Length: 613
Image 1 (cartoon, rainbow, N blue to C red):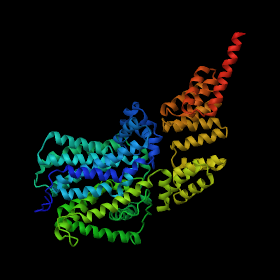
Image 2 (cartoon, rainbow, N blue to C red; image 1 turned 180 degrees about the horizontal axis):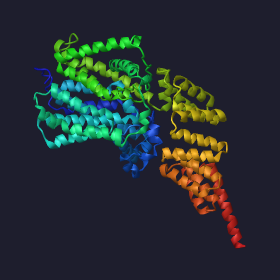
Image 3 (tube, rainbow, N blue to C red; image 1 turned 120 degrees about the horizontal axis):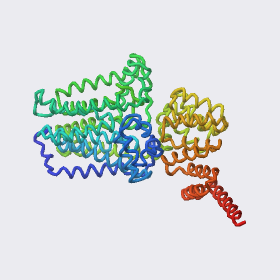
Image 4 (tube, one colour; image 1 turned 45 degrees about the vertical axis):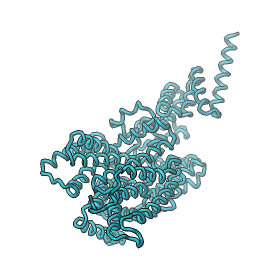
């Protein structure tokens, strides 16, 4: 027990606390259930045909995973959860958001039980868990379905830690095996869970009464180390994604990376304490000199943190453990190995538990020792946590509304972070899809002025130019995109569309084929290739491509129509009629399908008249 002589820990039933935790979590995140898909959800879920049939599950454990899943890193258990959600909910975002809220609530409950096991103090555990349940910095992870990896990795991390703590009390091969297996599931959900062995070593060293010899330590940690080696072998050798090699340090310099990440760490700590200015896309300028004002301020701030951490080691092992948890769990996303985004709120999901531990211990200890407000009994620890929870819950509830849909998210992000090239790129996409091409072009150009090597913006600008009839400019943007990444399938597909429009059909076919080579489930490329085959009279090849398109997207109305047209042109009118019927069952107002249906009936009528004669 952390604090002696505390009668507050007289509550014998911890499940009363659990009910309160669950109610707070679902209350705070209840409005997120009404949100649409946002951020990267379009790539990992909405337009990801891979998760829409269980026939693809075996591919989770092959090199084809990266071609189909839409993930940059190997995270098969996260993708598997999308299979399950799609089976249950289709493309109803409510179900996917419900799963995320359920996982967050589960993590909060597991966090509560873990803290009770570590600290033996229900009030500290309860306060820390409540703060974690509603901390605003976690809203990105809970609201964006495509960032479920942090939720799942944390779930397995906490279960593994709980079973390890139970094993330390009384060794059992069953509990030890469960802990090791959960560690395996955790790191194959997201690499942030790889820090578990270091966290449990610190727990064993600081918070347990038993001190083991080297043999005992080896017995406890061998399984975790084997799993870690296995994961690293899979991640960087057996199933390595070549696209990860394109990511480099800021400014291609280790020194600049160190200076910049020092600033990032200071920002993380700041928004944990003061989560009032949150953003879906942080733009952190590179720091290239030790005398840069931003680095100096960050260095002074972090120096104070390190001094406090050093003092905590001697004053309170529990406070030291909570601060160390935050720093340890942040290591995998601290750009030691270069990552695409050097700062994101979702990276703090697991590390934030350390911050919440610190708050719980500090608040409860301070109130017990001093009675922090006049007129309140020392042991009635209510006022300060309640104020924090009210403020955090209001911010979180409002922050959920920012994630309502793509338009709201990127409009608010551009306002909060004007230098966010991602925000301007996504705003450009929305204006382009609405037919506001001039505004879209301005947004894409602004995104490229902020980051000229932004491949998506070059590609999207090319699409906007093409739709406006500026074909020469469109060609230039596609080629710029492919100079940055020659394997980029979307740009190859769009370049093929442009060549087809210019009637350079052989070049269009080559582009579509290359796009499919890079992304075999690319329905649009299959459909476009089929449409080009129709133009040159190769109807059998066209039909094969349309069949591939609907194989990966069984609701692809245009591809069904094009297949019907190919059958009609190849004199297979019965099959054409079957396809037109499918199209009209999906979209009764499909004008081209109606016309094709009339042509089929007309030709069938002429045939019948000919037969009568």
